[in-house]
Image (spheres, rainbow, N blue to C red):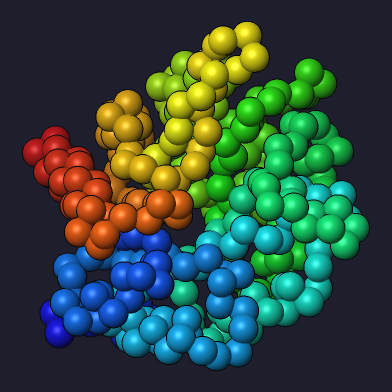
Length: 292
């Protein structure tokens, strides 16, 4: 095998490109040992005790660094965090020792109902206090720093007391958490809400970013005929998002970068090619820094 070997307990994610681990690719990855930086898994897909998912993940974890990405904590929800869910998350982290753990700035549950969406939050003082309380609880329970991902949204709240960047910056100040910068989410929001994506990236607190996400989006139209982008993770990264990614690296420097492709998952070679394109941009940025 030619996969990247590392210390299973102490291995860190390098500033390289990785991809989301998909069941249809696992055997090919193990057979070919591709030269890729790391893999990311969705925590909720591995909360069972055993079976094929854990069989393949165990084998891949012995060869590559892994990042754990949660979608079910409902960090922005009004109800207390689900302690059972947190317990399962803690057990999963103990089992696989991921180098990074991240969640979304969103809410996805109400009472006992879990929604199949990551829903937006109003950027108010009340919401800020609740999100920080939840992040403190997560970090204390897991005994590690978490990363918070900026959202993709399709509506904006009229009563917002601060901008998204201000909201994220204050969360980091209060909790000590890190950030996951999803560049596609920034671009999607910029079109949906009519702001300058480059200016957003220029204001983003990149000094707290430990991971970057890139993904594809679908193009639709709103009721008034205006463009509406959907963050569907179902296609290649758009050229405009690649350009915004290069601008992000110019500010942040090389960072572990994930290609997200969760729907209409392509053949391994197509996904691997997207990762290689990200690697080329990372290498160019590293070279520019050396020359500077």
